[in-house]
Length: 338
Image 1 (tube, helix red, strand yellow):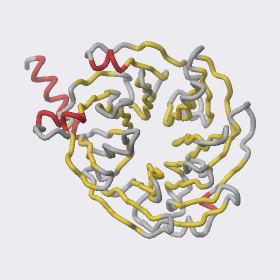
Image 2 (cartoon, rainbow, N blue to C red):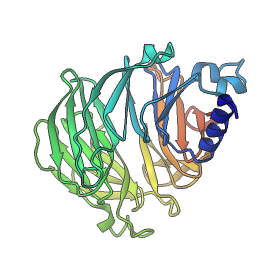
Image 3 (cartoon, rainbow, N blue to C red):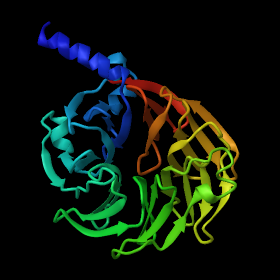
């Protein structure tokens, strides 16, 4: 067999077993990067895919490149860099190099390795652009705060006893929320290393654990006002009041274990172990349920222009396709990894 044919066969086999765990937009929203379980980042030209002259060719990646031998689990983007994490060190690539199809690691962060719990795996990141700090969490149950200028760990936050799956920064205070497979959400004061300042355990809540006795958490998101937090996974997706540390609303999707959730205006948008994207009213009623290509949706990425225009949401998960929703609620097209 020729090398080209072998490569084609391998790609087809990978497509059949592909999971897309991570997504990130370029700062202008024109490009979308996805990361999969084979350690490959694929870059799509959304401007071309959504143009009036779009066709099947414009729905395919403009470029692909290998980042890790294992999976890409999480990515964040800045005006300059695409930052990728998974199994190994955290790596940054310059967007301009990627778009020239000449990607190279411009800096990396050496993630501490521990033998227990697979400590070299990073599942979640959160970027504070104001002070150039990056927070990461993963297999060792520790949240790390990185100074991006020096590449050093400024602080670490210990308390979780299992894999960290999600992180969310507060908007108006120096705090961070983390969610883990130990069933807890912990709130940290990011100004110094130390113990969590607050603890929530949804699996102990009767309202949240009615449909499932599993304790793991797959997502957490703090509201822009810092008054509310949404989290879910094994327990039902629920809205928590941060002052009282109690659940106020449980979102009724009993067959869906949530992996991703976002606040958007007066709506919570979530997805997980069903082929749907859910739009919820804060009161708990379902506003909209939009079909998704993936049987399980692992990641929702939202982008809109500074003036509120050009709203786009992308959903990736347990297949090689990425759904693109304009105005966040209408599936306009599906990107193809081919």
